Length: 144
Image (cartoon, rainbow, N blue to C red; front, side, top):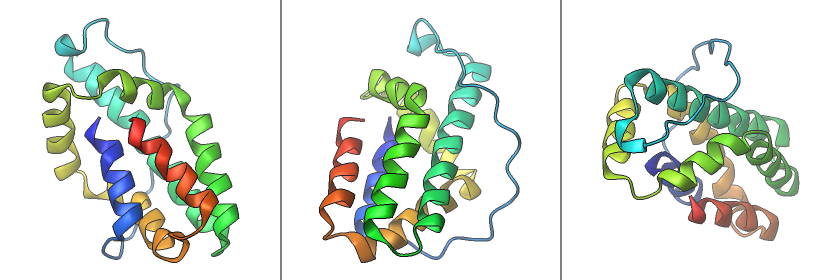
């Protein structure tokens, strides 16, 4: 799913300063994937995007908690991926689905606040780009 490519790109290249984050609504357990992604209802799609934003928020929290320590950042990002494994697996399953990519791009374009936590990772990535542990975690996004 293209949303994860965004994460890797922002982390590798950096991004603009994030806008103030709006309080996030409580996130329910990971949504259940549609049997056929091409027939994903709007409700299922919104659930998937909420799950994706929850991952992004966990990643932003990891960046905040790292305090500039690249190894701590890498460990926090790796933990975020593990904690949100359902959405990570779903992204892998949907990789290359043009309909989902188009819908996700449109959704992200109208939800700038959803990207703010990822921009924290991007800013930290400018400092940690040469760190082996950080690079290893970023490579995990290549498979998504």
